[in-house]
Amino acid sequence: MLSRLHLRMQRESPIHFGVQILGDYLKKAAQALQAIGDSLISGIPAEGCKEILAACEALTHRLRQETSSLSPSFLAAVANDARFQMDALNGQLRAALDLAASTRDTNNDGHNETAQVNVTAYEALDRNNDGFDELARGIEVSFAAVDANSNGFPERVDGRIYLYGRADPTSDGILEVRRAIEITALATDSNDDGHPELTRIVLTAAVVRDMNQDGIAEYRASLDGTLEAVDQNSNGIFEKATLTIRAEAFVDANSDGHPEDHSFATLDGVVLNTIEDQNPDRVELHLVATQALDFNSDGLVDETRGEQLGVDRRPALAEHDPAL
Image (cartoon, rainbow, N blue to C red; front, side, top):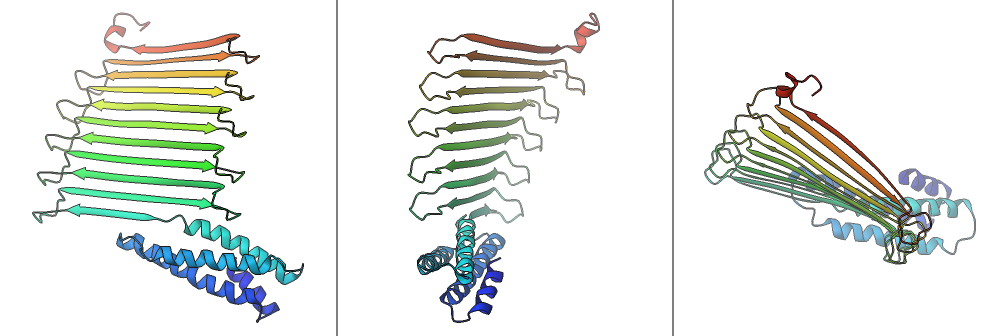
């Protein structure tokens, strides 16, 4: 898009100030993309990217200054379009990708005793260049493995994924919307046989929305969950697996501190397989959900709703009672 706009300006007026600015910008943007690509391939952070991105920002600011006083014309329209495209590309380039990776193989047997990877990426949009991002989002990913005896089977593996986003549409430095989610994972294999004795995944998420910026959220919600499996004798068949999820949400439309709607739900599950075959001895799943409504927002609950569902399956008992 920027290349086409540059060509249009060049055809219309080769000596127009925007032709030189946009040409310089395209060169800097290409350098930034090349540096980021080289960093992803080599695993070495692109140290020179900051200077290149600063130059891109400066060229965008220069074009904005030059076009602010132009009278309506074809060139002015093309220059303004180019400026918007440059702002958008700057937002992508500012998604400063930091990559760090390290491994250690002290005995040179081809099996790393430790390995670690960390990746961070983010982007932000500040259309009016006042220093307050209207939109921002990012992701962090990390992975670590420890194989102390260097036999190719890590005794511990950790992983984490974190995503976040925030919005400040009024660009006053006070966030109206915040969102985040984190997922962590853990596997431990103390006897190094390739079958983890413990595997755990944890999920945490939250969202807060305060559009009138009074400090009282019109909407907020959270989610917490854990999945865990245990294989004590490390034969590859889990004896026990559990699931726990908690979710809660508040709606306070008039932002008076008294939610009109408060919802809460829990989900608990367990699978037992003590004889370690393909048929679990017990499967349980329980769901409980409640909702409290305060129609006139006076702090007193006017109506409560709830639901409870359960599954309890025990094959051994089912042989004696088909109802189970």
